[in-house]
Length: 83
Image (cartoon, rainbow, N blue to C red; front, side, top):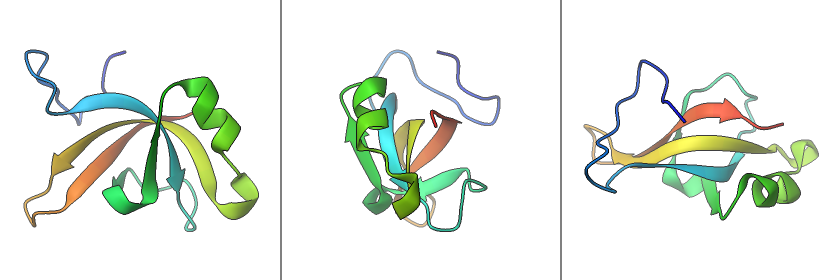
């Protein structure tokens, strides 16, 4: 799956990967990057959908990460929402 133009990936290493995840996002779906603490990595898209709970702000997604920010935080970048 290609990453959005604003992201890059090194296909020679597994430092940053694309994963299915559930992201806790109480502010809605407008953000594009999320700290590691609000991202639950799942084994598959189906598992992410099963663990999502939009009423509790937990949304299934495909994300790229983790990558280290310039401030030293580990971040995941949204590729696309699944729900």
